[in-house]
Length: 352
Image (cartoon, rainbow, N blue to C red):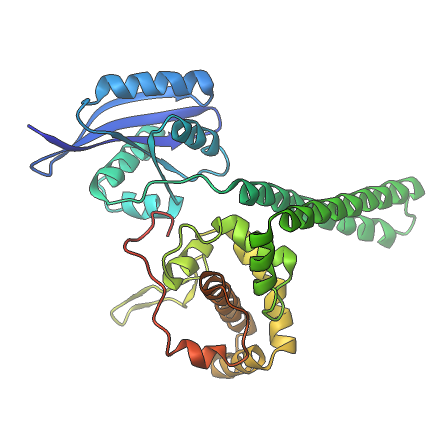
């Protein structure tokens, strides 16, 4: 019997890696042969490689497939890539949707690893490439800023509550204001670091400048979008982009008895969705193109947030097109775009 493919499916957790080794034979039969658990650290990575090589046939390469689990998968993915191993990173919603098609009655870390292994054996997936160093640095900074903004919102709410009391504690008010001041300063420092990184790279600087010609899109928004998509490296078309961001629409409908309201999936990159919220508000306020589009959608169904999400999706798609075509915003672009062919690639990325 000849093997066509061999995969290690890895369910990544903070402290451990639950692994399942499977093979695809020349008669297209999928077999899961071995399971094991390793520590999520350098020593565990070494043991994982030795175990995989012991299980595998030397004739074909091993494909290591894992979910994008927060940040806990990143160290392993980079470690394997540096050792010339083939790595695939898949969004969790793709694995969960696939797992529902399997006859799995009890969900455990082991069954999750087996589902990932099966997915890797059955699908033709694009191997992962690490993000450019500058995008990795910008992503770290923009996510740190996001945490600071969230923390500052909590403290401001605490400050408002304290001021609303009949007898507010002056010491508490002082400390809360000091913490807000510190967070403001830290956010300012992060924005400067991002700007400095952009100015050091002439190509990226031009790309950012092109994207900021879009109404509502500033340097920070453009930086977040490029960092979270690695310069749209994994994106092959607009449909895939909206799916990756979680701005795609899901609808549940069956016959005449089941009909749910269409809504965005939110099963994608939440940092992208959050980054586009304020720019969409600015766009519908100051750009006639988006103002008219927003008004038309609100007039059709009367739901302002739904219309705003549609504008967010349009902005993201436009950023993708401008980046790929190295062009700037044109108020008549929507009409011209209809005459242009779709930007597509030869295959679908596993990050869709």
